[in-house]
Length: 141
Image 1: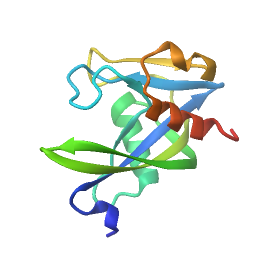
Image 2: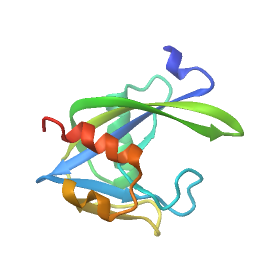
Image 3: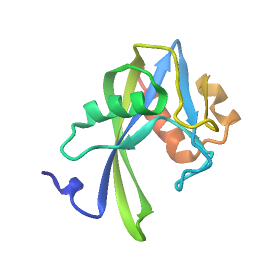
Image 4: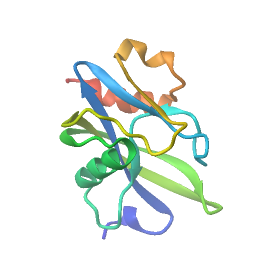
């Protein structure tokens, strides 16, 4: 087990899904504790001992209903959040993913999704952290 999976740290994986030059963004539910109603790429916590390449595809399926294929790892990022009243360091692997299916099913009724060109990303309420992840993935596509 590596140091990142110890107490006080969370491991995550994010999927930048690109199809025909468009990037998939998903709006988080208003019921989310962390960044409600903010647009971003599909991302979630890894299971204990789960490889990030496997976890990113599992999270993509859980959050969008899409099947995908990892093209490549595009970078890493980290951020602090509060979890059960304790500051937590979040370590995230970011992947470029090609969709293998196209029908999107979101878990919450108040969520939304869109496919945007890189020039259109500013038209939704996306934070700088998610923009940076998309930029990582679109470099050398």
